[in-house]
Image (cartoon, rainbow, N blue to C red; front, side):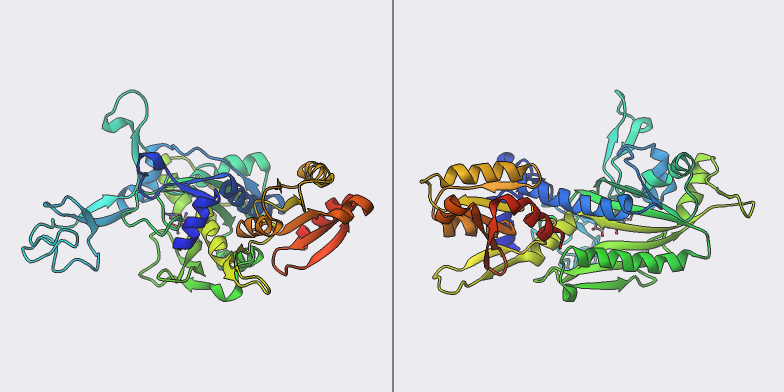
Length: 442
Ligand code: GAP
């Protein structure tokens, strides 16, 4: 993880937020390559979940919602962690922190940070939602929350979307957006942060058909993660036990990815059968009916919901961990670091290089780069030895290296180097667009 964090900073994938002020706790900024990588992941998700299907509609709901939404959803009362404070060092810990010796609130309990005995308070419930105020007056009537999940924006718009699109059940609503949680134990880089992005889809079904759709979505989502190039042996399902199930869930499976090291297998996505919990709650709290009218059978009902909820940042971390490798190169003293990203999500698709900076090679390489840039993110580089330039692109996951050499000037061909096999092919310069399109599609 340390090596990956360092690579991400050095090469402009991810920076600590407000770094020049000493950083903000567990908030990260995506640099030029990171924003492309995460955007590619989000585009893939949006394509698979919305554009390529006729039974899912897109939505972009606001982050700030009516405060009653979070009472209805159960977050005001239930989205809490028990915490203890140390009266001496003022640090705060989860009550179940394994480093705490003794029972908090009693004289023998020892603070895991300053070591003092008897200074830990009794556990108090701490809500993980960020609060702010709407309007000019800062009183309890103007409290609003930064949403801790995007799902609620979908439930409150269920009828707006269904009626405007005339979708029939079963159908889904999908959205990508920021969520905020005042996590007590954030960490592991972008794995658990206080501001993050979710890609969530709520699929509305007829009660009784929910388990069939639950199984369907479990499989679809696992296949999507496989399609990102995540290694088969690093992916698994984890079924929630009765104790683990969230208050809204009738059944839940996590898609887990093996991050290695001390993290091991961890959740990257949750697939939940939420029954009619959310729509029923919003009906009660808003006083508005959220029923579906099944015209052929002339009956009204509150649909059940199967939810798929994946973190864009956590998936970004998974593809980075999955792709990172260091390897020896035959015939070379120096090894190389490679980010073996699936070409479809790589931030740069090809590097374009003149072999040497003379004899018209840079001019031809610039022309090729400019021409390809219309269709693909391209990086032009003419500084340093060619081997160095290849290595720089390997390290950021660029799948192809296009080199203009002496032969290029006589027969208008270039070499294309494959990041993973290191094999080079000669390709006609005029055919490069078709070549890259074909390679990126396969
Ligand atoms: N609407 C259901 C829901 O929010 P969740 O299991 O709490 O379910 C879904 O979150 C996904 O959101 C997780 O699998 C994870 O990928 C991502 N996620 C949750 N909390 C996160 C955090 N603090 N930092 C980064 N990603 C997070």
